[in-house]
Image (cartoon, rainbow, N blue to C red; front, side, top):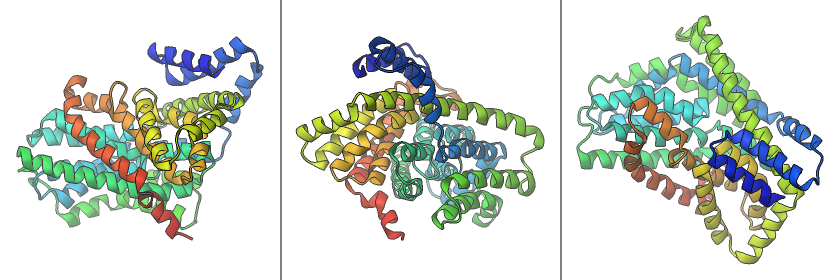
Length: 424
């Protein structure tokens, strides 16, 4: 059955069938071909796969991010980042990275970050003489932080799929997020120096005090949400609801940039996005159940144990495989399908499940900026108004930086689990 399911899945992906439908159809096809499970299992597993309290955080974080975007928070965050680094050559490009990191700690979504920040920063960079393909590639890569920096929807999905503490995963995501952001900032600064870009970036920026004052309540959101989780005041799921109420209050009361007339549109977008993700999770849960029933995880574990002897080699093989998978399969779907299979194997090699979760998320997140199906690339091209073929050459240096960061995350566990080990 596993072979036929995977073959059907590959064919459907090649035909550009939506991910959730392709996964469900391949699972049903496997059941019909071999008949070793009743079709009733399909309905049961589609329901039970999303019957999880931690998964409630997904739609609420999506809603919180959309509320912040509709409330004009992104513009204030861009002004703040420009005030921090805008006085140096390439400061505007560096502010793109910093703003995306901050907004990622609000939205938890890389695509939302691409549209919200890119709509402001890409035109601004073009006006200051940066090539549009460079600006779009930088924006797409920086937005990848949306799935690494907590609160991260993929980290929630990994935690649910592998029975790993979501709170620990959120803490562990801080180190890799800062590492990638720092590496991208240094890389961008060097590129700007070498190419002579960004010499006028300091023009028109606000003072640090003024920018901080305007963005204060937006900057406090990740402090409230993440601080509440780490201090034990509320769980990650409860934090998602707190984030929604916080976004509503600052948008309606403090900034007054979010009107009641905007709410139906925001709610509609959030429902559509949540439905797509939850349907994908349900379908992947069914697929994973059938693979587990067929003994695939155990077989893979035994095969890997006989072929690969060291954790170092295992992690290298996993990274290569995940990089290829991420190029073709959406991050959320890949996590909920592969995490239940690979996490137990990693534990057999002595790899901490929290550490392995960050390896998976950082690696699969690169699929958002790699052809042929990098969603961040398409979003950035749409915002910049350029063709897909123009962004790819500019993307390669940024992709190399992220891959280097992935190797550090993989082979220096302290980057991710160091903060977790410090907490009681």
